[in-house]
Amino acid sequence: MPLMETLVKPVALKTKLCAERVDMVFHRDTKTTEVLNDINLEVSDGEFVCLLGPSGCGKSTLLSIMAGFLTPTSGHIRIDGEVVRGPDPRRIFVFQERGVFPWLTVEGNIGFGLFRLPRPEREQRIAYYVKMVGLQGFEKTYPPELSGGMKQRLEVARALAVNPDMLFLDEPFGALDSITRLIMRGELLRIWEAERKTIIFVTHDIDEAVQLADRVVVMSARPASVQQIVSIDIPHPRDISSPRYLELRDGIFKQIGLAHRV
Ligand SMILES: Nc1ncnc2c1ncn2[C@@H]1O[C@H](COP(=O)(O)OP(=O)(O)OP(=O)(O)O)[C@@H](O)[C@H]1O
Ligand SMILES: [Mg+2]
Image (cartoon, rainbow, N blue to C red; front, side):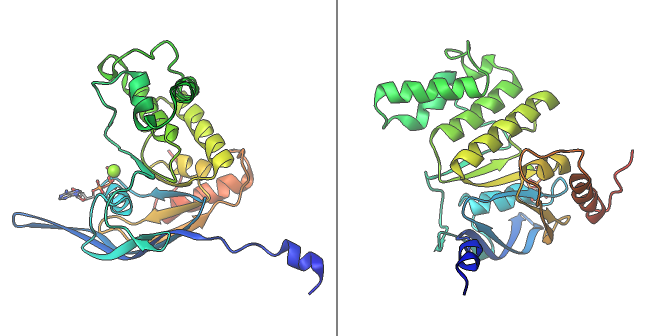
């Protein structure tokens, strides 16, 4: 084989996470809720995947199963080839409902997972993330005195500061205004491009998914299955007015039964 062909041959990407025939049924009293139906998905190491679907379809449930907080009714999740049996400190989960520690200051929250680092390094890292999410001047403030959006930024900073192997983000920018959302998306992409963490990001915002992801996993209504997987083959930074962007976004709108019109 000519040398050039050998050189340009794409390297097979390592699978980081694999969902194999995952079903989830909740039983409460006499009520049975079938939430996930035969979910199969492979996520490569360093990939940014968005799970997109209508409210109540089971996105948070699937993310919790992937992160080991819930056990599926059948099927399983593998990470690095091992079946997931519970949460792991190398994988960070940012919850849809805000999960900052109210009894710790902004600094305390960001530094929470960094207790093993020498003090100067810990302080440097805290200062870096405080700045990244625009919370300078609030280092000594406690979460009840922060706005909803500030708490959300704090939670993202806390997750990123521990340098996790994988990030599970459940609508992390949901409570932010549209300008802060755009800034946070940009920051998240910048960090992801620099550090190539594997990210699974739940959203019900089509634009958010198409702006961020390598692939968008479109889920059906409950019981959710994978309806379609859309590869977003546009390099970052993405031009959101480019014909390809609009084509991919409109394709997803059609897929979920919505024409993109108001
Ligand atoms: N612990 C539980 N016990 C019983 N039912 C549950 C439980 N957790 C979730 N459900 C049900 O599972 C379904 C999916 O919930 P889930 O939170 O995963 O949806 P979602 O796609 O994340 O919705 P949203 O976009 O509104 O956050 C809902 O009908 C919900 O009532
Ligand atoms: Mg949810």
